[in-house]
Length: 322
Image (cartoon, rainbow, N blue to C red; front, side, top):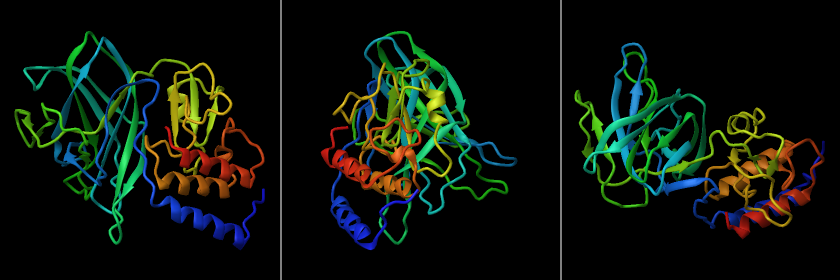
């Protein structure tokens, strides 16, 4: 498949991208969102890591932050932000996601602990040159949905399963700080034999969603399809080499004509949870690779691409609203 790649066409795209770099948008909320604390732009955060490698450091740090459930909640998936403060990212194996009851504004009884080895790791922020360190947005679907029995205060912890110590030179992983400053603040234990939590100086950035176990539609790149109906299948339905992201939405149908934001946000191409210039770069990467996920507003199946796809995508991106 050939695309219009003449020099004049590329120059026009470069001019558009120069304008794009000055624009910023806030993270978006999904239809199934229960709770959100947005991140500061960051390449790391509070250390929270379990090094299970031979002669490694073991489970040496954990960060937990509180949230308030407004009713009995069923939590099916979690999003969060963090990173490594290194140019080359760590080889994270997965994450342990824990939920605690509240004990007088501190983590109390453990309610749930699950290792999750299937996750997405998408760049949401890049520290300016020359370091070019990245901050990442993560999304995980819990193997078993977590049932919170009533409204009230709870705590969540996110711990990266990442080798460190022994023969490993892997970096530490940190959970990014939230823009929210809402006491009680996040708490951490670090090389504590008793795992005694102590307050930090801020909150952690995360999102709680209720979508696990439901059926709905799959949002991939700038597309929406009703042929992929579960969160697990949606997360696994990205072609190798694609820069697109995937999110699942519990909706009976895809976007109505003229609606570019719900249930699928076409402009959030990499599904990082926010609009940024990276969405445009990722879209163009896939468009020039002839990926059907860049056929804006389609179902993501094979079909001819055209320059109109780019104009449609840029129109959606500049309109914001996700």
